[in-house]
Every structure is written in C-alpha cells, then in structure tokens.
Image 1 (cartoon, rainbow, N blue to C red):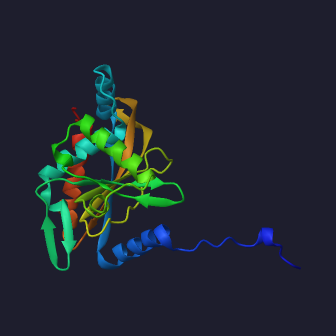
Image 2 (cartoon, rainbow, N blue to C red):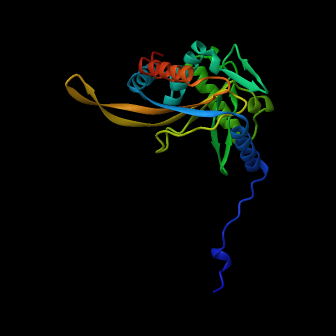
Image 3 (cartoon, helix red, strand yellow):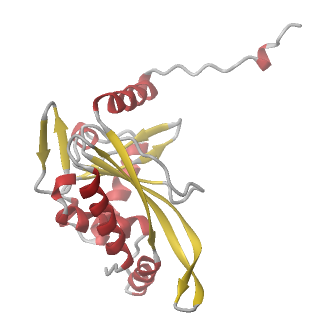
Length: 229
C-alpha cells in the first residue's frame, strides 16, 4: 500500500532559533545538578491585593504581584540569586529577574528586567509588558537575553498545575508558576474554598542544598499568603 504525501510525517528541523533553544536546554541539563521542590500557596491575599490596586487605578496581573513577592523573598535569600560559572558561585547584589515569554512558532525567550528589585509593582508590570512586546518583534538586546540572576516561568493561564522548569543556565534557580485551583480546606470546623497555585522551584544543587531551597520556597509561600502591595 502506498502512503500518500498528505499522510507522511512532518519533519521539523531543530535549527535556527528552535535549534538554539534546544541546544541551551540540553546544555542546562548537562552542566547543572538540577532538583525541583514543589509547593502550593493560598492566593487569597494576592487576589485581594489585585482588587485593591484596581480600585486605586493601578492595573496589575497575578503574575505581576507574584513577581513582586518573589523579589522580596530573593532579597532575604541571596544565595539563590546569581549564577554558577565553572566552579564558582557568583551572587548578585541586585535582582535582575528574567521572565519566560512564549513566542509564535514554538519559540521561547527569557529576557531580563534589570534592577527589578528596585521597581514598584506598576514599574514591574510596565517592564514585563515592554519585554513581551519587543520579544515578539525580535527587538531584545543581547544583554537582556543573556543577563539575569533568576528566572520566573508562568503557566498560570494553562491547565498545568505544577511542572519541572529547566534552569536558565548559568542561573542558580528558576520558579515555575502553575494555574490557580479552587481547593477545599478546613477552617475551624468548616470547609471553605480557597484559590491555591502550584509553585515549582528548580535549583542547582551545586550551589544550594535542599534544605535552604525548601526554606526559600516556604518563605515565598508565606510572602504570597500574607501579601501586601
């Protein structure tokens, strides 16, 4: 039986931008001792803060507020904010936060918001939106594409609840954010529904051990659950 051209397998060559992404992912897994911790955080305070800011005329997405929470925690846990080169860990005095951005054509970019630790929530939002716009028109600088001290990857608009993000090498860690799921929890003698989001922290075990990474993730959950703008 002859197989027509319309039933032949489609071959996608890993070259160009897609090839560069593929090579970087493989290299990341090859050079770093990657381990992932998973947790869930109650998003009630974040959702309330989002509403409060909207009443004040400040637009902010859940991602913007989680970025703000993450930056606050990174300042308290500087051992996760930096890069590993050869056999040296370089810790940065400032948070240059990379944001993973899905692009058309099954492509991915993770440019950096330099000086993210000094920005307000409104400034973080503007910087993130600017990066997304310029990423789609291929106008990011080499510094933005290769710099950064920590990366956040948000799949909150999908049905993915938790995942294992691959390090944006040579960075020490990356945070993956999953979708918000309404979950029944006990409140005294009652059951109440609250919004929980999955958080996944992948880190380089060469630079950080499991216990301090778990402490970081726990502190992040607390920051989110007690979030104030």
